Image (cartoon, rainbow, N blue to C red):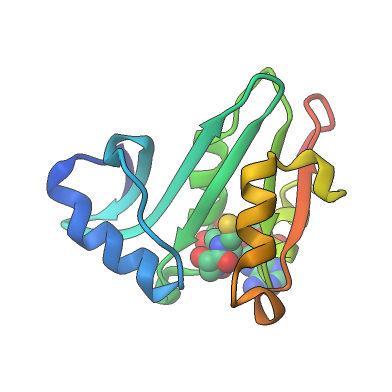
Length: 141
Ligand SMILES: CC(C)(COP(=O)(O)OP(=O)(O)OC[C@H]1O[C@@H](n2cnc3c(N)ncnc32)[C@H](O)[C@@H]1OP(=O)(O)O)[C@@H](O)C(=O)NCCC(=O)NCCS
């Protein structure tokens, strides 16, 4: 059975491996990640950063063999705020996932400047096809 729980220090290695498999980097503190686990296996994770006017999702990831079973949706819902817009930079086919959950394509201005720069300088930018997206509070999903 798939369960969601907060990550702890003992999860760092498995979490880092899951992120690496998806060309993403782990960022401290580990407690900021919510995990989807099945038994002892970490099969997905989600993390959000709080800004004054919005929450930024960085990132949501589900292990390849567990995709299209609703786990990404479960993770995302568990880290989205109920009172503010949610923004993120989607990549590749994940745009369809976020659209299915009520997000719309948006301009780069909605993304905090430090993260805009990170994306602009990233060597994987071309194959990543980064796309800012937003879920506006009250727009449904
Ligand atoms: C994006 C990601 C998190 C989705 O996780 P998931 O567990 O497969 O998503 P769900 O099963 O909850 O999908 C919910 C809905 O989103 C849509 N969706 C999800 N993946 C999709 C895809 N590859 N293509 C088209 N639609 C998709 C579907 O409408 C799906 O509902 P359905 O399966 O009933 O049709 C997963 O594909 C992933 O980890 N990708 C690599 C990492 C990444 O790019 N993360 C996003 C960057 S922040």
